[in-house]
Image (cartoon, rainbow, N blue to C red; front, side, top):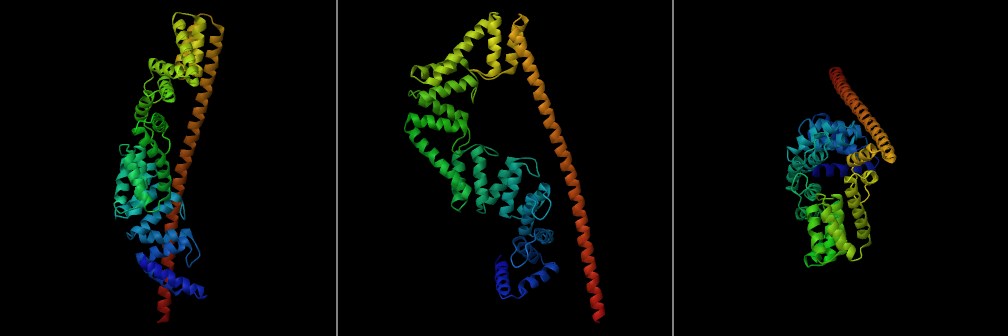
Length: 408
């Protein structure tokens, strides 16, 4: 890198004086003679337009020459060009190949990049455990991007057990190196840490807020229903009506817990008795559901139809198509006209949904077929490009040979 900076400085000075850059001319000569470092540095100049006209495909060509000689920086840069489609046709499989070659040589940024490919399933089968392995290697060299990415794995519990403390640790390490995304997510965690401190001191409102954060994965914290239920319970036991309502709601709809109507009624009643309006509404809906279900079970055709409608619409309970069809069917068999109409309507909607799903499947199949064609065309184009480069090099060698023989 020091050598490159010297070359760039010299190139800039000579270009400013209006003369052709002797430094770049010398660098090109070295690159043509097979010097891998010169080939890599020339690739950097062409990629960024430093002292030369910017040309991404020429940059890729020089990176490839250096990469084929085992130059780790060039391998990483070539991997990036393939993953982004910059200077070459986008090809994630080829990107992974070059990232891996550089990563195995200990190149920290390539290790991070390879980890990203595994995290996102690009060019490889998605494997977060493998991603974590490469992130860790890069963090051992102090790579800020890898520190942030490892924090993300801990936050979401992918590739490692979910651990907010470890996530914050890695975010802080990345932030200390100026990583913008790490800084932004730590700002969200500041609110979480504030709620946590108050909740631990017994503040019921903070306990509810903390439960909500875990329930929905808010403020950068990974979703964790067990933690949510724990904090809701602590707040509810202190009479926090919103926490009582949320427990009732979660048990009613099976949100993060096994559905339990008895528990739902219990918590709704506690909140409703303290004046919580939404709890009163939900309690009324749930009571109506229980009454309707009892009548339907006793053979009341209208109640069977109403129960089917409740399940179809999810009114106070979770939507359940199978249950809706079951109760509509029982009412229909007793001659309840509205139930037959409802069954026909549901059948129609089912056919429409199947057609939509089939259409999406066909679109995906066509896209996959096109991607295969693109891969085949890309492979053929690269083969022809190699042949063209080889032929060009052969012609240049012949010209040099002719020139040399003529000079004698």
